[in-house]
Amino acid sequence: MSIQFESVKVLAKQYKMSENNLKKIILENNITHDKQKGSLLVNVRAFDRWMATNIKTLPSEKLVEIETDEKKQVRLIHPMLNAKRVIFHPPDSTKIQVLTRLVESLAESGAVTKANVKPILKAVIERERLCSTAIMDGVAIPHPRSSMEKYVKEPQLVLAISKKGIHFESDDGKPTNLFFLICANSIDVHLKVMARLSRLLRSPKFRHELIISKDFDEVLEVFTRWEKNL
Image 1 (cartoon, rainbow, N blue to C red):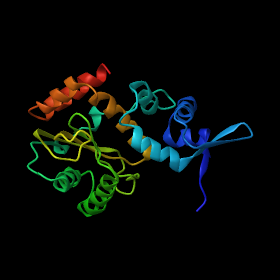
Image 2 (image 1 turned 90 degrees about the vertical axis):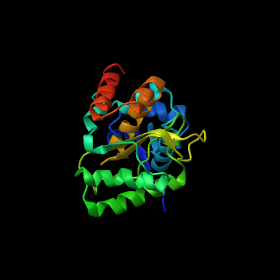
Image 3 (image 1 turned 45 degrees about the vertical axis):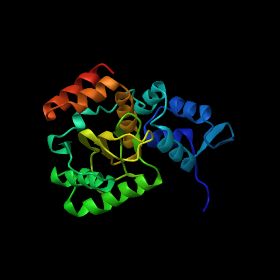
Image 4 (image 1 turned 60 degrees about the horizontal axis):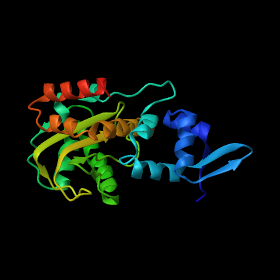
């Protein structure tokens, strides 16, 4: 199978990033690339792999570059929230049970059909088997590896909040309290949602306010207020 290379211009268009921001990320992180006739060509697989692995630990300024499109606009998180897709005190105790509950809520809220629950859950579990999507500080962001455009027309977000925490194979070995399932209809949207969520979740106060939220209205208020000042 031949290795696919794309120009920065083409890749930036696919991910809806500015060419300058994309070029900086590629060169500063030594992502596999080549130069031909003055053009920078990028190994697409290497770029995708790097983004998936490193987005949770990138500096905030790099996340800003990822979440900002060529029109200098960002995708806000709070409009993606839905009362039927915010789960309080999930009773599930295992990783698979939590993932299943998250995906099933997509169907319960009408975001996907019941028939699509099984393939979406399979994609989420396959991604989880590569490495846990639980990061430090009680947060997990499960997601499929590829675009879910076959199943969703708009990006979907599910949030589950567990005050006591659930074991989810996190980097620090501690229980996970906040679970964000991202099901996006394109790779660029997925990365932008991941980048913005990662920035918000780095604040201990933001995480605490979400964990102690009593209902959907409080969750929405927390997100709206924090995004306004992000």
